[in-house]
Length: 200
Image (cartoon, rainbow, N blue to C red; front, side, top):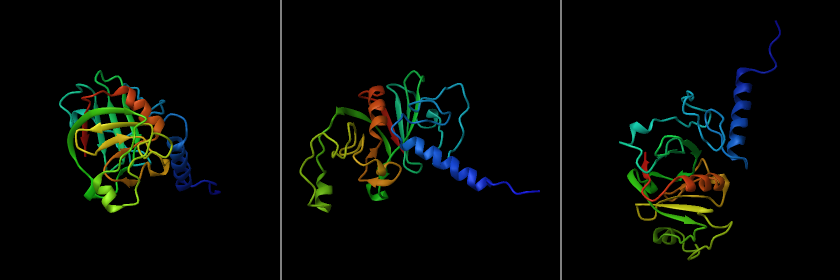
C-alpha cells in the first residue's frame, strides 16, 4: 500500500494557512460557518474552536440581556464577539489585545462615544514611557486608531481600527482592542452609545 502524498498534518497546515489568509485579506471576514462579514446563520451549529483558537460563546454566559447590543472582548483568544439586540447578528473578529496584564482591564463597561476618522492623542502614561511620541496624530493611514474608534466607559480604553494590520491577533496594545479597519467600520455601524461591553 502506497503512502498518501498528504499527511493529516499537511492538510491541517494547509487549512490553517487558508483560514488565516481569509482573515487577513481585504475581503470581509469569514466566521465559523463561512458567512460574509462575520455574520453567522444562527440556525446552524458552529464549530467549538478553530485554528486561530477562537471560541464560540453564548451571550447568556456574560450578559443578562442584549439591551443595546453586546460586545465581548476575549483577551485569551484575541477575539471580539458582537451580538445585536434582536439577535439577528453574531459577529466574531480577530483583534489585537493588551501587551501584558499590566495594561489589561477586565470587567463590565459600555460604549460611551463613537468617532469616525478619530484623532489620536497618546495617554500621559504612553508619553511618559516614550517621550518621542507625537502630541497628536490627525486622521489618516498613520493614525493608530485607524478609521473608527469606540470609546469605552473606562478612561483611555477603546475598541478601534488599526494603522498596522500585523498587530491584529497579537499582544500589541496599551489596553485597547484593535480590529482590521474594514471590520471596525462594519461593527461601528451596528453599535450605539450604551452598547454593553465585557472584557474577559
